[in-house]
Image (cartoon, rainbow, N blue to C red):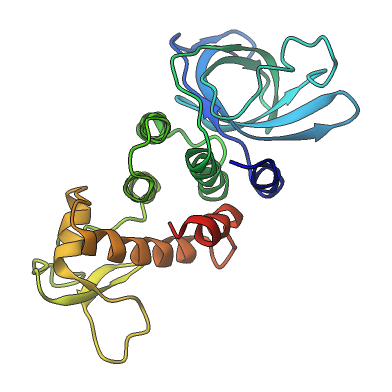
Length: 264
């Protein structure tokens, strides 16, 4: 990825975080030690500190103050990078806790070029759609798997659809795509459907403004199977529509960059 693209992404979205091998344990005085985590986003706080949005396996998205992290000789200065698996420790009860320590765990390839842009897209989704202090261990594992798939150059358009679907499932807003809303009739291949973001699939009507997709696409998505080119194309349109609804119209800056550069 060019320097210009990297700067643009960094300016428009949050930064990701990384997994850790040690299991976190709760200690007295609200202290958490050795929590698998990834940086989603960070920004300056006062003269020498950072506020870090961290995605953790057992505590979800947490806000941490990294005191002195911008100082030249701070241990945290080179550690709090996106897409790097970390083992993090913090203390406190307030909305913003105090980061005590963060150690790089390793074991993951770095993201480059297109994969790096996709990684920033994942981070922006998590920051905008996951509430703080809401644990999502299954989604955390999916995030780690997705980063690994991107780093190994697996097809981004398939990897992203799987993560988007997992995100909506974990946040409780993904309907069963194999059954119609209401009557629960099975979705059938060869029939066109629309997906009501609040209820689920129904047979498409001529007056519908929502994206219509073949029943086979919905069945493939429910099975997490994106091998069919038509499923790839229609699932992209459908997920864009469903995510826009959950975001309440708020733009995804990295999504627009990906559309402009890569048509993903």
